[in-house]
Length: 510
Image 1: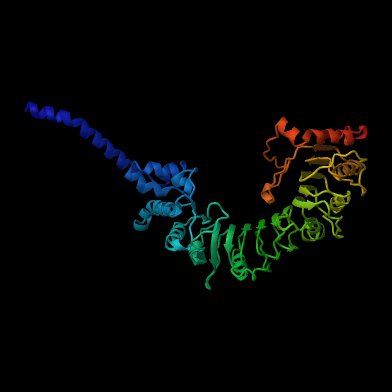
Image 2 (image 1 turned 180 degrees about the vertical axis):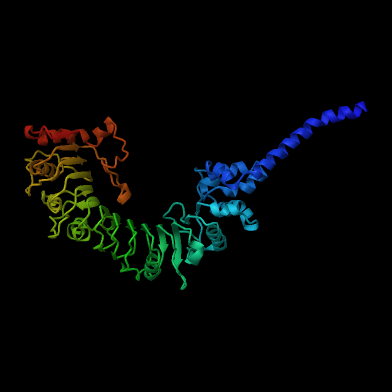
C-alpha cells in the first residue's frame, strides 16, 4: 500500500507535465484563425518556417501566414548563390516550397482565404512547369491579392538553360483571378487564351523579361479596367519583329503610372487621361500621350543611344519630347553627350508647364569649341516658365585646364528661373561658359550652387538619376580622392571665373 502510494507520487509530476502540454495544445487549436494569423503576420515567413520545425501544431497552422514569400533568402540565406550547384539548389528549393504548401493541397481550410501575398523568386524554367502550375493554382485558390512570380536567373543577364516557362493567363482571369490586385511576372512567355476575360480587379502590373505578342499585350491591358500602374521592362516579342507599336484606342481611365524600358516597341500610343508619372528610354522613337493632361512628372533615359554610340539623344529631347510631353511639370533626363556634336536644332513646341528640370549628363570627347553647349541653351529656351534647374555632369576623358578667356554663351533671358544646382563643374570648354550664361540671363535667380564634385552615378538608367530634390544618398570623396580627380583644381577654377562681386549674393561654390 505504501509502495503504491509512493509510486503514484513519483509519477504525478510526469502526468502533470503531460496534462499541461495537452492543455497548451488544445488552447492553440482553439484560437480563432484571425488571432493565429495576427500572431504569424508579425513574423517573417522565414521565422515562421523555423518555428514550425519545433511543433507539429504550428507546422499545420503555418500556412495561416498572410505573406508567403519564397526566395533563396527564405530557405538558404542571403549569402547563398543559386548558381552554385544550380540543379541541386533548385530541387531543394522546390521541395521546401512543396513542404510548406502540401498541407493545404490535402486538407481543406478556411485560412487560405486570408492569404495576402504569394511570391516565388527562383531561377526556374519550362522544365519545372508542373510545379509552377501547381503554385499558381494554389495562389489563385487562396485568393491571394498580390502575386509575384520571378523566374529570372542569377545574375539576371544569365540565360536560363531550361527555356522560358509558358504562362497561360486563364488561371488568372475570370472568377479565379478576381482577388488579384497586383501581378509581378519575370522571365516567362505570356499567352492569352481565346476565352480570356481579363483580370477584373488588377491595379498593378509589372512585366520583366517577358515575351508576349503585341496583340496579347493590347488585349491584356484593355481587359484590366482598374489598372493604375504599368511597368514593362525588357519586353520581347516572340518573333522579335511583330512588337513594333503599342496603340490602344480604348481609354485607360485609371492608369496613373507608366514605366517602359528596354522594350521592342518603336512607338507607344495610349489614351490615359489620369496618367501622372511616365518613365521611358530611347528604345522608342515616338510617344503619343495626347490625352494625358495631368502628366506632372516624366523621366527619360538615353540608354540605347549610349550603347550604340549614336549621340543624338539631345536631338530627340529637343524635337520629340515637347510634343510628346507638353503638359509635364517635372522632367528628369539621363543623357550621354559627345562634345564634338554641333548645336542641335529645336522644335517650335515648348514645355509650357515645365517648372523643374533635372539633367544627368555624361560628357565625353574633346570639344573644339563651345557650340555643343547651345543644345542645352536651346532646351532652357524651350522651357520659358522653368523655376528650378539641376545639372549634374560626369565628364570623361581629358579636361582642358589651359588659360583662356571665359565668356558667357549667348541666349535669351529667363524670367522665372529661381534656383540652380550644378555638380561636376570642371574647366571643360563650354562648362564655365554655360554657368556664366545662367548667372547672367536668369533675371530673378535667388541662389545657384556650383559644386565641383561629381555626384551622379556612372549608370544609364532612370532609377540611377541623381537629384538633390529627391535627397539621393551620396558618399562624398575623401580629400585624397578629390586631389586625385582634380576636384580642388576645378573648385579653384570656379572661384576664379564665376566668383564675381555681382554674383556674390546668389552664388555658392562648394
